[in-house]
Image (cartoon, rainbow, N blue to C red; front, side, top):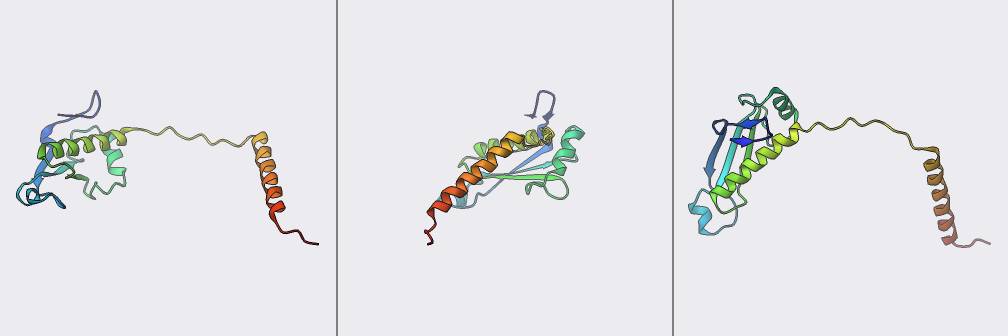
Length: 137
């Protein structure tokens, strides 16, 4: 079970993990051992609440395919188990971040005092720069 929050958990049978060969440097080990992990998670077929499904499908994340499958590849560690844990942690983070609702921004206007201070500062800066110009007779 992958725990997302107190109420939301994903059963292990909904997450497909497969071992693949890692890319890049690693000596002979990289050619012999399948230590990288490919994680696949179908959002639409999952037991996640509708709120999470809608938020995940609305994300413009390159890890989510057009048909609603999350694909995460983990190969930063040398061991299969650590890569498996890293992939699951990334899936967990992705789903948790999708569940966070941003507070709606309330538009504000600058105060008259702050506007005046800004203009005064601009005038001072302009005077300093004017003093740097060459003197014209």
